[in-house]
Amino acid sequence: MKSKKTGASEIPPSFSILFDLIRWEEKAILDAARSKGVSVSLVDLKECVFDTLSSSVKERLVLQRCAGHYRNLHSTALLESLGHRVVNSFHATYISSNKLFCTLALIKKGVPTPKTKLAFSVDSALEAIKQLGYPVVLKPVVGSWGRLSALLSDEFSAKALIEHREYMYPVYQVYYIQEYVKRPPRDIRSFVVGGKTVAAIYRYSAPSEWRTNTARGGKAEACSISDELNELSIKAAEAVGGEIVGVDLMETNDGLVVHEVNATTEFKNTVPATGVDIPSLIVDYMVELEKR
Ligand SMILES: Nc1ncnc2c1ncn2[C@@H]1O[C@H](COP(=O)(O)OP(=O)(O)O)[C@@H](O)[C@H]1O
Ligand SMILES: [Mg+2]
Image 1: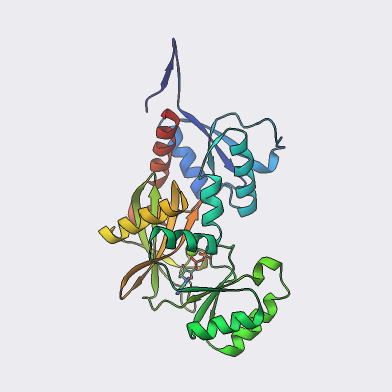
Image 2: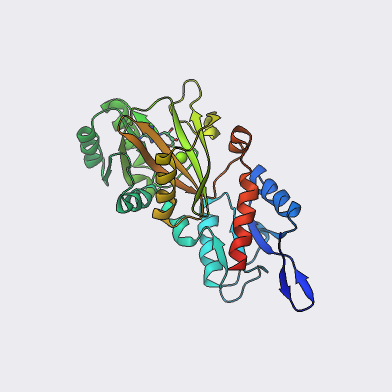
């Protein structure tokens, strides 16, 4: 890896990783950086006291890896305001982390996405479901790992679930209701790094589970990157302004649809399934950014 030349001394390329949890991914990125001679400062968000006027994070370039969504979003906002270049940006994280905002961005970009309805009361949610026709998928607008996403197959279960949601935090009364896409028992997760689709997996749902998330026991298998998958993945990343993202897609009789884009994505199952060294590609991308 090339170093920056400043007079007589050579400064190795560098960036910070902001984290709240060291997972397989953070370790792998760190190992990749070390093996390339890239200097990485690990910054534990939980130990930081941030000031709104001056930054305590040394490197200008920051790879945002906080697993906690609100920690991630708010620390990115703060660091950007202090002049840091954060990957992914606040805009990309904000748009992609909300399923409605993400869906709207995909539609604007012309990316096919499942038919979705929005409602803000019990009666209108039930009406929206009726219009779509059972089964439907009800998802929280903010959430991941399939958590609290429900497959509703009849009016009794729909009413029960919506009634429960009425007693939850107000964001759960934003009813994001989606057609159930008749897909094989799998979906596709592709990875886009710096505008390139670098890897993709099929995720097969575990027995007695309709969601394919690997966090729910979904099994990863390599998926070859077709022209369609490549084009849609790149477009989906662009739609939210994401630089390092995971794109979720489903196969339909009319081609692929994108159901979400994930910033700060996990890839511990993808690397062994595909043999693609995603951590290394992330480090290369960060180094390329540092040179710009
Ligand atoms: N409209 C849908 N039709 C069929 N399956 C879906 C639909 N939406 C989501 N799923 C399944 O549920 C999983 C989780 O949904 P997703 O929108 O990706 O939310 P999360 O952010 O929790 O991963 C998907 O990976 C897919 O397996
Ligand atoms: Mg998902």
